[in-house]
Every structure is written in C-alpha cells, then in structure tokens.
Image 1 (cartoon, rainbow, N blue to C red):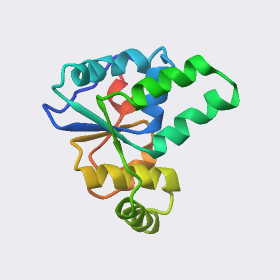
Image 2 (cartoon, rainbow, N blue to C red):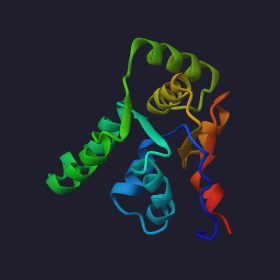
Image 3 (cartoon, helix red, strand yellow):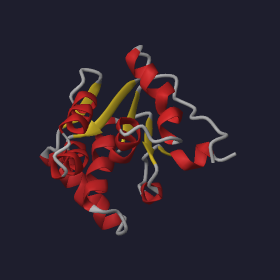
Length: 150
C-alpha cells in the first residue's frame, strides 16, 4: 500500500467518516499524508468537508477515557473548525438511517447515521476505509485503501 493517490472531486463537499478524522488527527503514517491534499483543499476553500455530529462522540471517547487533554483538543480543533460542517443528527437523519439499517443489515447504527447525513447533504464524495458503506445505494463511496493500492 502507499503508491496511489487520492483523487478529489473538483468541488462540492467531501464527507469524512470518523476513521478518516482519526487518521488525520493521530497522524497515521500512511493515511495521514495521503489525506493532506484533501485538508489543504478544504483550507483553500476549493472543497468543503463535512461529518455528522456523531463523529464528535466517536472521536472523543478515547482521549476522554485516557485523560489525554492534548489529543482531545486536537480532535476538537478539527471537529469544531469553521471549515468543518457538522451535520446535525436530526429526526430526518435518524429516519433515513433507520431505513438504511433496514436495507443494509451489515451497516452498524453509527455508520447508518453517517451515511444518512451524507446522503441528506448530497456530498460529492464519501471518504472512508469501511467497505460496508459500499452497500449504501446512492452514496458516492471512496475507500481509502482502494485508492492507495499500488
């Protein structure tokens, strides 16, 4: 792994699931550098980035559990940045997520919420490393491992 590069859409919004946030914040040695062009496009405002409010819960559990205030601040700086659109976990998102869980049984509840939020937003790309999202109809899924294959 490590030879391919991530091709970003020419505009619109890239939805990132929590794993992508973890790779970025915790500076994963392979995925972190591969994601840098996406974050630079967000900073230059040529691309938007979004995630669901559920990512706040998912991302902060470990730093809170371990009392790692610095890591928590790092996550919060990305999650609560003006550049990051946090999609509310609204009634509409929850209803869409329930329908997705019914249609795609292997999709876990938090993932169904991510997928529902992304579909409601109409994102240009759904960036993840979780292949279960491939089963979600209409979701423009990009699996990071797939694009990084040599």
